[in-house]
Amino acid sequence: MQDPLKTPSAGWFVVVEGIDGSGKSTHLPFIQQCLSELGHQVVLTREPGGSVLAESIRELVLHSPMDGLTECLSVFAARRDHLLQTVWPALRQGQTVLCDRYLDSSWAYQGGGRGVDDGLLEQLSQSVEAGGAGPHLVIYFDLPASVAAQRRAKRDAQVQSLDRFELEDVAFFERVRMGYQRAAARRDPKTVHWIDAEQPIESIQKTLKEILSRP
Image 1: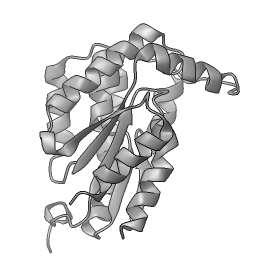
Image 2: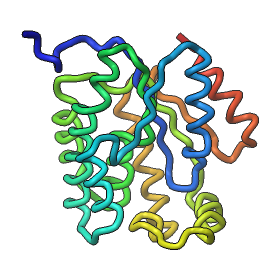
Image 3: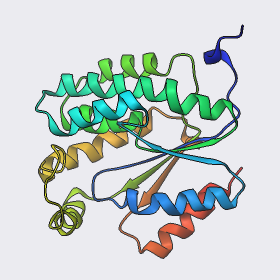
Image 4: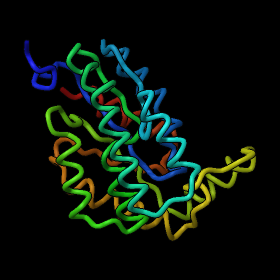
């Protein structure tokens, strides 16, 4: 019997990244709609999360006190299960996986934000993807941390309780933003697309359509 991890992937793996308040979540439904109109059968998922075990770990990461290394290892454990249970099976079936955050978030939040060593992040990144496909396309919504903070303040005023990340200051999110740049530098430039998240929604959506329509 063939090892399912060695079965070639036929689907397309698309990842959306950005600091909290960059508008990433706002544009995910539009991206999903564009992909569907292009004929893709889309599986929408997220990290941390996306599988039963990973969703349990997500709750701990978002709401339980822990240091940066514990947070990092927890996120990678959730990611491995997410890949095994959700992402890779969908890709093998020819579906398109649209993921809200992936590996680059660890380089940004645990690396840039918490100061976890790049060497460890690289080792974990290679290990967690062993046996399967990584993203074919990564879209980064880039926004200065101060602007993102203003957006979050408006949103958070309507939220009763904030998670550990939403409580962080502007300096933390500026480090996260720089972490995304280091993460993107690891990738094939053909898979990387940056979105200026300060643009009007109409301009952003036009750019997204162009990116997603390319072969």
